[in-house]
Length: 450
Image 1: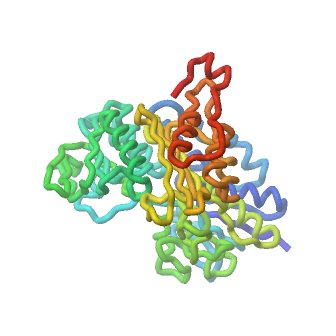
Image 2 (image 1 turned 120 degrees about the vertical axis):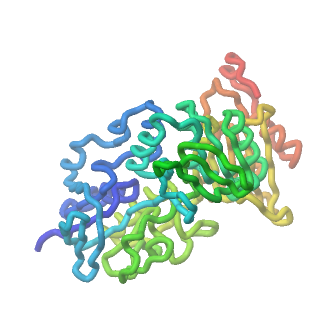
Image 3 (image 1 turned 90 degrees about the vertical axis):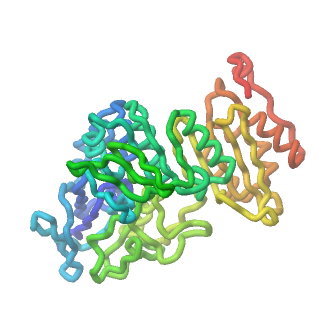
């Protein structure tokens, strides 16, 4: 009997993690990974560094080219035009066909478009794929006196940094009252907003895109904002979020809403068809305070690991654990662990917030009314993931977290030990039966201070 054929559409972190882990557990299954975007899996977060010339695209590949043949993972560079589920067959845009026994859809995301007039002009684009990077290099190669970015989020701030690095002035249109204030509390949002402006980026809050104007050659020449202002520009970046890349699956027997609908085992409504990563939409959120669509690198990896186990061993439901995320706002690092919404009820949540006098470093911890940690945000320094994963999971008291904060510090010793001042500030606000830590010999020697 021939070995089963596992076909994975998409070679991002979810699809490749799945392929790798299936091969570790099963030496017989034939594995084929399909992508029209690139021949090899690459680090998507590294695209900005390719644009800025810090690395070449081939340097974004985490595995050597021999890795795939050695592990008998077949790679096919092609775009899937449609899936014939009844015949278990993929049809490529070339007309070629490929059959499968088990199909996994891991097609990722695509930049949002909201029907703005002029959104398809030359010089207007999003930033997600390898093709987007190539297009951005062409669109900004010359003649761009100003760029406009639409939408305040992580992709938007990356694009702003990329353009600013090439000395292209940037105007940033954000519809909210504060930068990313649908995710960040007010103080953190204001910290990021100040930092953006300090980098000479023209941040326009409570301002939306109304229309993109064309020149005689079909290229963008200006935008009109919701406030009626015309801003001349030769490049427009559309970074108002992303959505599941599933349009080619609509109007089929597969159940598709915003993404491909799956249960806790990543199973769709069709036998032997699964979906993972950005394009998967859970029927029910996988945990409290989690969303039905998870579009984060580490959750994509966990999707791949869990489904690989389920395809090779006794199936288990997806259990994501404590939420965390990390990013960079220009040169300020950001981490979040547990639950820290943008707003909360003071009658239900106790908030501790500390900000360094520089205005570039801060720490927030939310606690329930019994003083147990709910989550933390930190900007401008690093904290250990395993520390906060344990603290939130075991529901430590806020006092215990702060008392042990020196154990969570991830910065080298010659960096400013911010936890010292955080401990003092917490004790002043909430009290506590602990003594703030003291500087180490190396910190004193290097003069690291807050």
